[in-house]
Amino acid sequence: MFQPVLPFGGLSGWRFLQDTYDRQMETFTKSVELKRDSDYFDSKIADVENAEDLVKDRRLLRVALGAFGLQDDIDNRYFIQKILEEGTLNDDSLANRFADPKYAEFSKAFSFGPNEIRKTGDVNFPSQIIEKFQANSFEVATGEQDSNMRISLYAAREMAELAKDEGSIDTKWFTIMGDPPLRNVFEKALNLPEAFGQIDIDQQLGVFKERAKKKFGTDDPSIFSDAGKLDNLITTFIVREQVSNLNSSLSPGSIALTLLQS
Image (cartoon, rainbow, N blue to C red):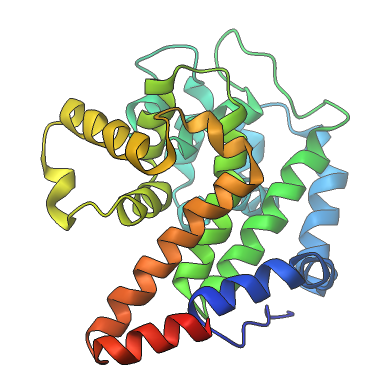
């Protein structure tokens, strides 16, 4: 399988990845294994009528889970079946009990739960899932070289979607707080301490909103629908990570020179 090209780390690596993303992604999606899985999903998913049908087909399940960054749950078939069968309409459903919003997003996408209309027969459904699967697979492959680049790619994709969501400001923040990669980006960009996650959840919300307002001029995450503001968020995250990594081995002058070269 084609491996993403990432000749640099830090801010230079991120700029290179942004400049070459479309070309690299096009090559990546033509990789034999990825194309086989995508084509198989496209041809078979319409025949899936319930959660059991999906989890018993490992190839379909690999694409379905991979689209939502849940590929590590591939062997937890009973758990995944319960996530799908209970749906998301009930607040007490299994998917809704997780702080990580990806389980609810996964269940809602397929809509196998009570009083839900399954999506697998929709004409646009396969392409939507395949696109997410390919994007996440590229991010995973990038993360094998640099975990911060994987987080940055994920944050750019997810925040662009979350920013357009019709939910309230607080709902969006709780989504960010429950999503480990997004939380990591905001904690670093807003210069929050490592122990921050140990305080009361409502206090965390207040601090996130206060710091965001000082940093970005507003506490409304919908501002990140603007590409420039989203790039500012991710660039800040990457630079702070770069500084943290350099601090342990370089003098202040060397750090400044390295960042200027980036």
